[in-house]
Amino acid sequence: MSSILDVLGAMITGSIILLMMFSALFNIQVISYNTQLQISLSQMSEDLITGRKIGNDHYLGLESFLSRVGAGVPDSLAIIEATSTSFKFLGRSNTSSAISSPLYVYKDDMVNHISGPFWLADPLSLTYYDENENPTLNIADIRSIKVDITFLYNTYRSDIDKKLIKHNIVFWKYFKNLYL
Amino acid sequence: MSIQMLLVLVALVLFSTLMLNTYNILLDQSASIYDNMYYLQGQKIADKYFQKIEADLLGNPPAFYFSQIKAYYSNITETETVNNLIYNINLNSTYCDSLGNTSGAGVDTLYQKMDIRINCLSTSSDTLYIGTKNYPFSKIFINRGF
Image (cartoon, rainbow over all chains, first blue to last red; front, side, top):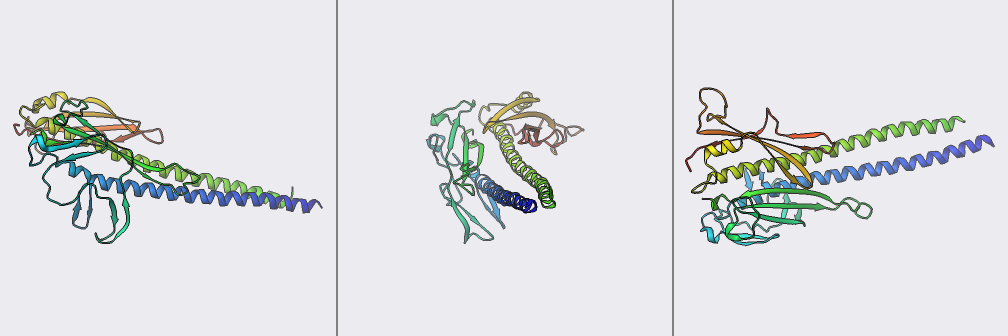
């Protein structure tokens, strides 16, 4: 009888350990998957902000578009609208791309996207500064912009782990055309 | 205690060791990823100062004349808070030659080299250096008489 109890006890304890093992392995897979998502999100966010190169072709990022504020137009016409969530400007461009395009991810070519579209996520915060680095909303005084943008992605298990994977990027752009 | 129970306990000890090691590796990996994000943000902060100096040199009259840049950015320290993380920034400008050498016969007041070093607190609570004394973010400015 004693040995039967021992065997039963070992079986129960062993089962608990097996459950722990499976649970731990599942958690490891979730963490690894989320880590992979974080890497992908960071790469895509950086590409969107700073641009990317596929083969011999360069694709401009948001920073490059902002460099064109006021290029080839009078200073008084350079900035059309400046609010905390939107910014409209005039500037000479050599492409017909629109800034508000969604982000697609391509591999090897620019024809068939493999994922996307990824849209810019909240919160987006735009702050404008005059030439003395003081925040301003007066369009005529704006000389630089601070863009605070966060990209979000759902985790593997959104039901039990609601924390979103995010990548916050803050960058500044000085409108040199308006200084000239 | 029977042999079965003993084997189960041995398995538990071995499994626990394995799990601790695996979790430790995963934590190291995620710390590395977050530190990398801080590096990228640090580069953007350095770029901000380079842009600011370039913009300040433009205009008529400019906000800063070339020699004033050298005088103002003489080993100064500033801070920038991004996403609740404080970045400590050190800026230092020195006259140099056209190749960025700060010593030698070619050093001229026509050129100055701006070095930027940044540090912040890493995810592992160590100091994360983004640009060091020997390898700072550098940019050479030329006096174009604007």
